[in-house]
Length: 317
Image (cartoon, rainbow, N blue to C red; front, side):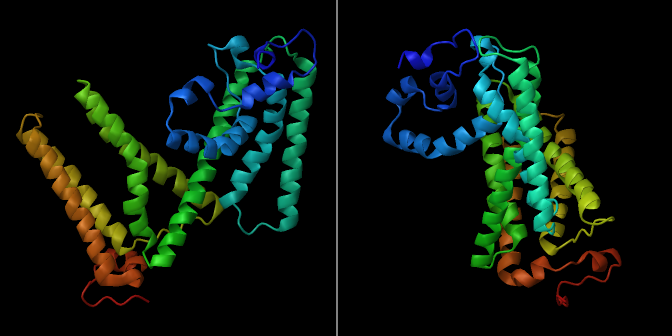
């Protein structure tokens, strides 16, 4: 065990012990304090964590040699282009021919091997190279790629569950996916508020949805115009229309309440927002149960624009 924790010897021989230690996601000291469920959860995550460490370089200034591990870096710069190509092809060009897909992966592998050759020639085991800090940008890019890939698989899972239970994609996004995206922000904002930083918590409550709305919709429509069609055929269904109306209503209500109370918020403000959200969820569920999947997913945009939309007479095409 001590041999695996020794630093690299002088020279260019590979220290496989330290390489395996670099890939090992288990902390023996922390494992002693974990319960059986935490140990089981950590064990299940080992393959994915190891795969991520093999494709995402990490620069850690507090560690020895800033976390430099030459064998790991060689593998990382080789696999990173392949990972990026895989994520781009995952949704960008679903109709691409198999031959083009194979050529794309082969080209990415060649590029990765060229980068690995450069790292092999210009670095050694004993000291991190001068360009080691630049690998942090590669790690950041591959981390985004992993997030994108996992999010895509989550969307596929939700679509499968929705198809099995005859629930529209929009309702799945407004409930299950929205809860999953927001629970982390909820816990963090509550912790900041309890710690005596209500301004920071309130700013995060407004800033996070604004980021998701502007950058999320902006990047999605931009990529849609570039990769699918220009202009992008955005369809406005009933669930999205109701959601937009609730969003506008909530923003106006918050502004009116803040102005009329000299920007001092109390318990009533929080209670009102929670009641509005409850009404929103009940409305969405009601439309899903009453209108059915066909009504909720039909494009009502043209009828809304020309003023001819009537929910009582509406019949999906």
